[in-house]
Length: 68
Image (cartoon, rainbow, N blue to C red):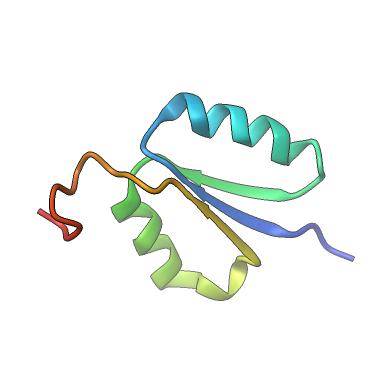
């Protein structure tokens, strides 16, 4: 059985670091991003790789909910 692949996306590096520590302890394969555009590009290239997506709700790059 292979480890679950989890994508973690949050623009706050401290949150990413804390969540990473918790998820890695479960033996999960983790891919983390602090840039949501890079995360989206990664998903577009290989979206079947992930079983779970953990994402922050707010992103300072977007003021109206759409890319600047």
